[in-house]
Each structure stands twice: as C-alpha cells, then as structure tokens.
Length: 210
Image 1 (tube, rainbow, N blue to C red):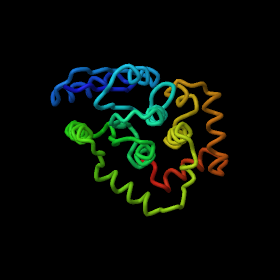
Image 2: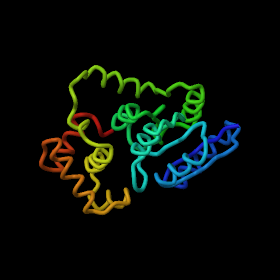
Image 3: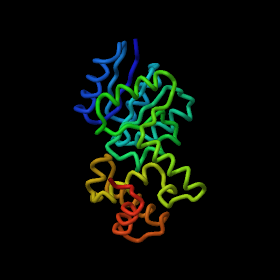
Image 4: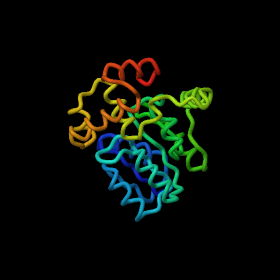
C-alpha cells in the first residue's frame, strides 16, 4: 500500500493523476496540494513513497521545493511534472535531485511506467530526455547563458520567451508585476541582453521552445 503526494495547482490535473494511480496501484494515502508551501508542510508530517511535483505553482517553484527537500535529506523519489518541454527543464530538474521528469502531455501509460520505475529505486529517463542529457554532456564545460539563471529566473525567462506579458507571468506565479520586472532585469543582465526580443531569439536558437 503506497503513500503518494500530488502537488499541482490545477484541480483537474490532480484528478487525472489520481485516477491513473488509483486504477493501477494499491494506495494507502493519497494527498493532494495546490501550493509549494502546502507540499512542504505535508512532507514534514507524512512519509511518502512517491511525490509528484509540478514545476509551476503559486509562490515558490517546484524546483525550489525539490532543492529544499534534497537539502533536508528527504530521499523520497520525486517525479517532476510540467507543461514545459523536456528541453527546457529536464536537465535542470535532474541536477536538482529529481528522480524523473514527465510532461503533462504524456500518455497515462507513461505516468504509470514512471511511477513503477521510481518505486524500484531507479530514475525515469524517457528517450527524449536521454537525448537531452546526451546533448548536455556533449556540451561539456561550456555553460550556456541560461544556465546562469536561478530556477525562478529561468522560469520567468521561459515564460517571456513564450510570449507572456509581465502581468500574465505575475498572475500565473502569484507574484507582483514589480517582482517579475525585477526578475526580468536580472535575467537580461546575466545573459548580457537588452530586450525581450533577444530572449525570444535566444530561446528559439537554443531550441528551448517547442
């Protein structure tokens, strides 16, 4: 009997994940939360066999939660779920301590397979993620400009590159427009750029947008 935590701010997504799990696994505890803070509070109180963690949630990002859990020596397998393509976040997530990365567009069978693999104590690496890892290793020590960004800055940069306005990003991340504007300024400085157009062009040229 498994204890599983689903952390995602969209109730419909949580319901879909819950159905997949209930149809394929024997579950003792199935907790659901919609914010990063709630996820942390649950983990401090309850032992889980698997944590399914969304990247984009109100407040702190899923990657920030992941890093904190690993800093606190929480060894529970964590599967990162995201609407973002693997090219954008997967390598960053694995470096932060994720046990696997799955896009929300993946088939339900893939989610089931990923959970089973994590329960064996192994990492879930899809064929496309394996390719992304190979490209990262091949790049060697050459650090790309976007790798200089913090997790939150990278998230904001990806959303800007996808055509979202600062107001839209602020709403999605439950932050102020002023905070998002400050993130944008830091991003442009770190990447030695001066406009959103440059960020968009960079994201296209590096295949961060799919």
